[in-house]
Image 1 (cartoon, helix red, strand yellow):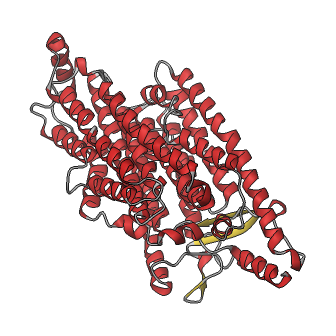
Image 2 (tube, helix red, strand yellow):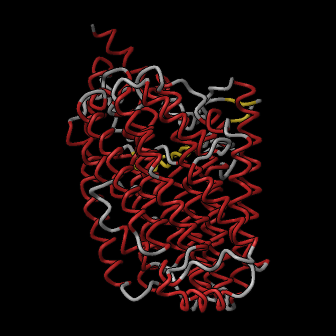
Image 3 (tube, rainbow, N blue to C red):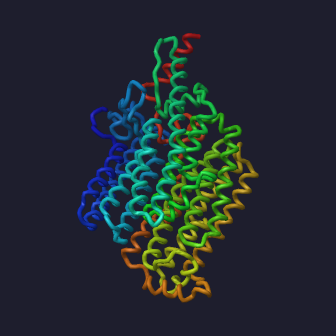
Length: 560
């Protein structure tokens, strides 16, 4: 493991996990909230240091350089700074292999920000048993951060499943009236994705073992591996022969987590039943695990299958999700329903960008998908938290009993309008840049093409329908038949947002405005050209440890 006990990506997992465990042991609501704030500040400092080290690393090796466990930076092992590897189960070729790059750093920062805002809501709403709620939220964040820096397929799978355990507890214990049904539904859908994915992981390992054994046959040496960089290199060279059912197992798992239709059955009840801060995490963060899975596993390991029928199916499935989510959001009778289905629609747009990874517009599409992932995480979390404030103060969530909150409340109106404008992707917003990059990339893509891009552009316009319904129905247009109920709800809400309520949502809004000023952050995260993404997966992934692929290929040539 080198001279350092822990690398920066390892510490990025440890800090929120330790903070969560400490928060769970707190005896008072205030102590748990302070622990959450300290955990966030420690994680923010760690992420800042990591960014500085990554900048230093790329100054030495170039903008497209990838941190690995074998490179040297100013005389130090790079794994002591930005990557770390050691054998976990060496007999099976499983490593604890973590590495961090700009894309993982951005997603880790998103995770920390949304989690601290969720814990601030928990403190403000005065939940029962707040300490374990704070702790479980941070433990979820730790597992999710670990997933973003994982560079071993088995480690990725373990964290992919582990992050759902605290979420099931959160929904089952702190959820609403139908919490048991929601928890069971979520568990069943998760199981339907987890078991095939496990089979897929084993299938990838078997194919990799065969590829390495074939390459190293002359040298009489072969090895089992689940290293994502090594697997990506094997796939890029055409040595990794994976069957369609292996791809199907991963697509199913990630489609459930995103979710994409028709695998979204767990979403409506769970989003309505879970505590609003948990719903914000589910929508803003957990769906990002699906994005990352598509990005670091599906795209680099299955390029040939995706260039055929599977890529077409994924493209049209993403379009169907975008259109269905937008129309369903418009028809919802309550605030949560509109935000939930708008989140579904945006995930369809993100997957459309991922599915357009081939052709002249591939880099644009991937950059747009990453930027829109950050936008979606912030917008959906901010929307849900704002809806939670309205629900908690008024006791109402349906449009029929709301509609009179916009008058005389400039803070509430300003926050709601900014989030709505970002949802609409008005010119100048970061979401506009993300959508433009995705649609431009889709237009120039080999699998997608002009027809898909045109349909996607028309479907994006549907966002205006549900966004305006959200503002009009929630703030300005009380139903004539329930005007008295709307007035009562407005009276229960009281005056404008108080300072504590404002700071639950304001950090998300400020970061979104910063992204709108500097949307080029996504391009830096996607600094590798599209072909190289297949080889090294993305700027997060390092070269294969110990040069196993190169050694095997050299041995194969000698045998010939």
